[in-house]
Length: 265
Image (cartoon, rainbow, N blue to C red; front, side):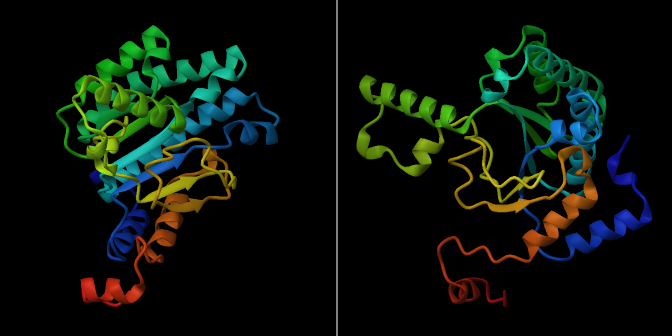
């Protein structure tokens, strides 16, 4: 199933308008929030919200692949999520396992590469095994890189990086004066992917929730007012149009950007 050959004419037109509207983000990171509240509003078990959320994952991954987005990172399970009721955690792990198994063929047919960040050794053995097998199976693909943040915490990753860096200093393989931002970044889980250009959070909540704390330094932030199960490609397009309407200055002023690009912004 080739995603580039799919889609309604109206959707293809919307994508063409986006592509001609400016430079889309190279890396989109998403905090998928609100599954439980979506289900509660409908007097359904929380797990039904998570099941419906899988549909949003599929649609957003496909839309990003069609738009030529290079990197998509999804906050799928935080270290704090282990504190949820055991039955909910078990069902979440089952859903993750199901996604990895059932979507593998389609991801491969569409040149998607899979990546994962977080304390992966904390995952159930069968889930971790399937995850690593899926990553290996898709490793030669060169299209969209889909990164799943699993048992992930931004503070944990920064702390782990500091500990590893300190050990290298103790061993004498690294001098303190050689520690730069780039050197520190090389110790993070995300060292092989660029920082996000756009971070989207669903459900209207306005916080980072311990997600990519170092990497989010210059990301544009878009808060979607809908719960994750309601977030489909139409809502993604709204976030992208919002992004295209912004001026990314990275500490500079507008006139400097104009001098560098020779274009009005």
